[in-house]
Length: 158
Image (cartoon, rainbow, N blue to C red):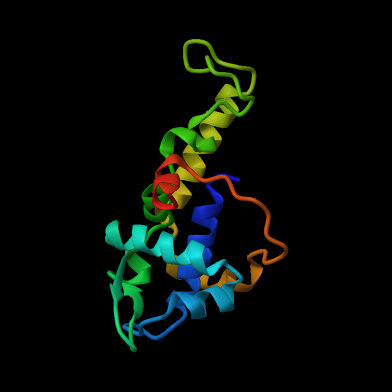
């Protein structure tokens, strides 16, 4: 996977929100129920996304989350940057797992992986939440497994 499970869950949840009429607050309980993403996970992740300026939160009976800007302006890379530790991303590591791989000391797959990561990053910068709306039913929603969090998200879940 190119990004963390946290980012996958966030994209799934935000895509669900993007299907709603603009300006409608959506509760984390509804999102959890409709996307099969654990409630506590969404609640904490959405607080981080609100801090990053992607979402706004409202308290009270009509509370919940709304987008801080239009889904057509929220790029997938924005979500990934808000939640993932860039140094831990597969996009910043050697595809073969070598620590010393780089331009000076490339592994056998370095040039291919370098080109591929650039293309993936370009797509993450190009594609928005609105682009994901047509894919909402394609997210896996089977049994949940133990998740490994980025350092940034570990601090949130403490």
